[in-house]
Amino acid sequence: MTSSMDDREKVFENKFKMDEELRFKVQMRATKLFGIWAAGKLDITDPAAIEKYVEAVIDADFDEPGIQDVLRKVKADFDARELDSDMGNLEREYNVHLAEAKKQFATQG
Image (cartoon, rainbow, N blue to C red; front, side, top):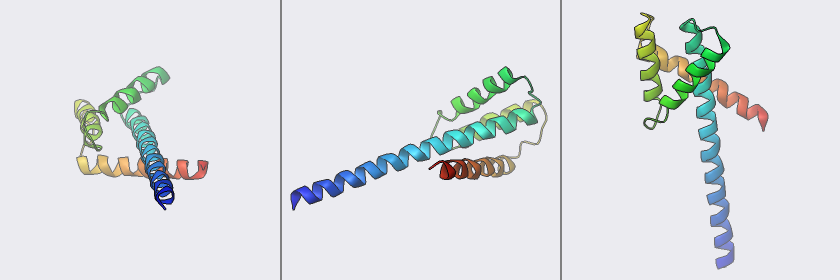
């Protein structure tokens, strides 16, 4: 009986670990897509500059849990260029990219 319970616990632990890993990958993909979108709005066209900007957006995601750090980074960049930087609009746009990232991972597996 104990072995069965131990096995079940390991299965749940492994599922939790896989779910968390997938959640992290989806969030990173969404942040990357959002960074690419933001780079376009900022008229960044050089591929190397786009990559560098996307890396900066992704790095901002490690400041705190959630996406507020990413949104603040992009908002500051948009403010510097006098672009529409409404946080609600930026969050909606991020959510579009989050849905796309989820779709991409769903079709992979």
